[in-house]
Length: 123
Image (cartoon, rainbow, N blue to C red):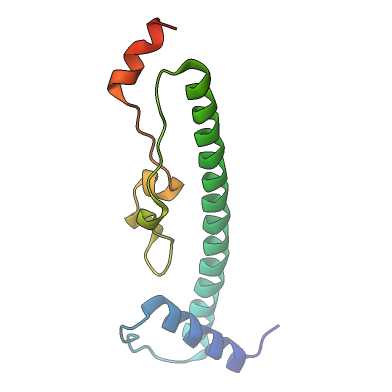
């Protein structure tokens, strides 16, 4: 069990991480507020870890889908699958995950060429 002083230090570090360059709003430092903020920081840490795991899993799946699409394209020559350059994929930082579209969360956007899809009846 952490001491109240250790919790205060952890809360202060978490608030600094959350607010970044912005000033941390003033709050009354007492055992109750420290305990509440400590529990919030712990929940936030667990949530961030879970979100990171989901993002990594989606990146892996996107890579696998892209590979499967390339293999399919080579076999059938009907369409191509392209991904968004990695420079356009933003990593989750201090920004809320709700600020990202589902496409940005997966890290890959698939684009099917309309003229290529029409060849499916030819193969």
